[in-house]
Amino acid sequence: MSAQPASTGDPKLAAPADLPTHIGVIMDGNGRWATRSGLPRSVGHERGVDALRKTVTAGQKLGLSYLTVYSFSTENWRRPASEVGALFSLLRAFIKKDLKRLKSEDVRISVFGTRSGLPQDICDLLDYAVSETSENTRFNLGIAFNYGGREEIARAARRVARKVMEGELSLEELDQDAISAHLDTSEFPDPDVIIRTGQEHRLSNFLVWQSAYSELVFMDVLWPDFGEPHLKAALETFSARERRFGGLSSGAA
Image (cartoon, rainbow, N blue to C red; front, side, top):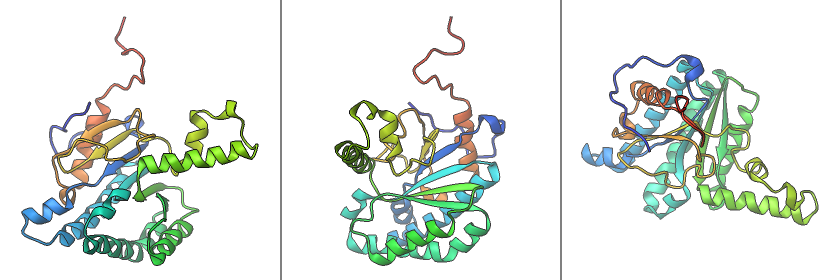
């Protein structure tokens, strides 16, 4: 289903036409990185934010158009309250510190997920980041925050059902495109590739509808150690894949 990139050096990249349009990233391994380093888990999350900054910069440099990162899942509420609070504090710091720079670099921020249960100041900050960058077009950064793929599909289904009940949409029009148009990610193309760090091999409820035909690349590196060389290696792995979307190989008779 996926393969570990052969190296994390500086592999030759595919021609731009072969690069993915949209990359999804499951940023996993912050806590384990901290534990292995003899540091509090909060420090691992801080280093994870640094890795995110590097990855956004690398994505822009390499000519990518869309990057979506899994920053806080609906399941993460099960973690200790102190850790959840630390994650919220990091989001506050990231937006306050990086928003001006991202705006000047023509980065558009989109936020996917539900606002249910979030502190009001977090909701306000997310809305502010989206509003301040809404006119940008060079690079699209999606932040999946308080996000769960199944929960997103359920919300989309409720929206569609409401339109059917109100006569805005007929049952015959209720197809895959109708569902996709009501997802949080409706303005993003489906991800061509999903990268997961941290030695785990699952999607963990991330973009489960959108990733039906995504290439999956699992990497042994823990997220705080992730950087441009790892992103290049993952892109090289992607460029070597043949995507058939249910059809035959190009070499098949």
